[in-house]
Length: 209
Image 1 (cartoon, rainbow, N blue to C red):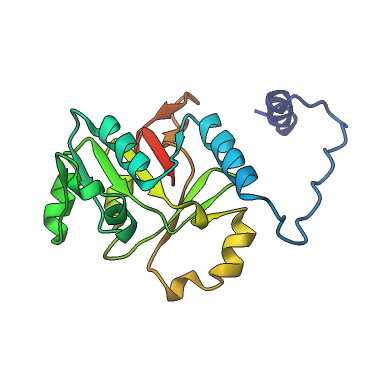
Image 2 (cartoon, rainbow, N blue to C red; image 1 turned 30 degrees about the vertical axis):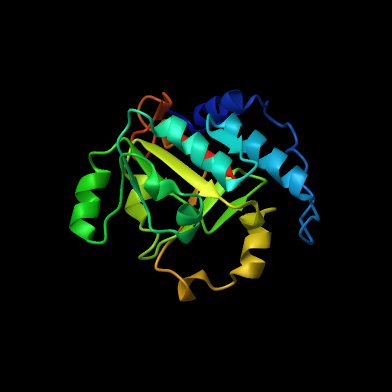
């Protein structure tokens, strides 16, 4: 296949023509925008729901617990040791399990329906969760079960990655892995067909408290 043929297929897929000038470059974010909490919550919801994630704005910790209870009914689950989950009473819900040994945690995450965590931060502009791996918040819980439930206080909701890196300029000094989770797991590697839940949770619920 010739070079021109390959480039023609790429242009066609992008809706462009030969010789068409490129789109203007977006304005650089010279400084972090000053978004109100309401705007951050609305943008987070819009971004995550566009990717088929679910967002619940809880009016209180009790509301967050009630949402979790309804979601977990009839499902098996494992929760991290994040202190905020304790504040919301999540470990006291029926069927919620916790582990301190890694092997027990691995086996549980491979067999339960839902992994429950908090998050170090959340990014409003992309609807992303920022997960910093630790003994309290192991990666297995947010990456292995088919459903992920994250319960996050709104004071951890930042504007964007620039906002994050001003607060955590050297993440390697705090964690062995900083993971960004943006919506359910999805891939289109095979035949360019979008499939969810192949290498991570196919369903994600975020509760902003």
